[in-house]
Length: 389
Image 1 (cartoon, rainbow, N blue to C red):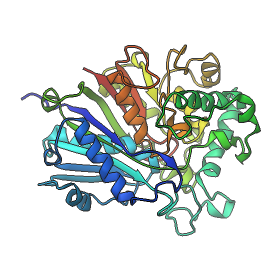
Image 2 (cartoon, rainbow, N blue to C red):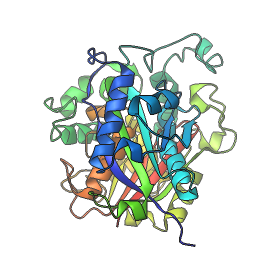
Image 3 (cartoon, rainbow, N blue to C red):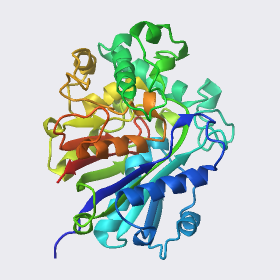
């Protein structure tokens, strides 16, 4: 029996605006519109979709979404628990599992955020589950929670503020080429970066992701079905989600991770499994979309996903390695969450597909293999490797 292999066949998104910018439609509406856009991009109809997947306590209920979309049958619905954007590629992994096991023929993976209309991610809430262990110590929001990991990382290794700046400046340069990016028309200089106010030292303003409204979706189906559709076939070579031992909710709740893994993305073991499942190595990756909620975690990910050695990520980015025009590993080519939009990582997945289709606004020549990570330094975390057939 031939194995059913999952492929990405459609991508769709709403417009991206600053936090609270979408007022004429509900969060549910823009999410449904993004899904329909992805279905149409694939050359499919809503009736062809029989599965829905999301993550991070998505408020856009799958059963209601199925009604809104007019799906004739819902054979699969799932959502990754917790971890914020750490579950983004986990949602993709669940869609792939459904398609490859035959439990669904086509699954839409989606995420929508209109933070001006509902709960604002990153804002302190005394009733947020799991937060009681860190709140008494002043850790009220993700920047302060994750700043401690970055500070330890900079203490252990030769990582400086200029290395964090390179991550932010690269994202902004790519966003300046992307008309859909919130920061499309706003260049950023090193002087402006260094003048940015402290959010939670060592993280400045431009080290922290945007707060935006928007929605994104992708459609996953079998390779056999993909071959009959209108877009180039992009295979999900591997997709995985999970976490290391004894992480629990990690820095978002307790900060009692194992000391050896404290200054990490929680992705070392996951990265090994991801590459093994895909049958590729770090040297095979042409372009990467690394979850950039905070710049310092991107540096950690470059090491843990094998692009440089332990403690060498500062020198790696200083060499220009992550730049689109000169680097050996261009990253976050749409502007990422630092400068395109914050849609819990789903915009990174869409950009990964566009790179392999050859339609990115910061296109990497002949890109054939792309790494996309979910949220870093949380549990569960996740990642996927995509390949152009």
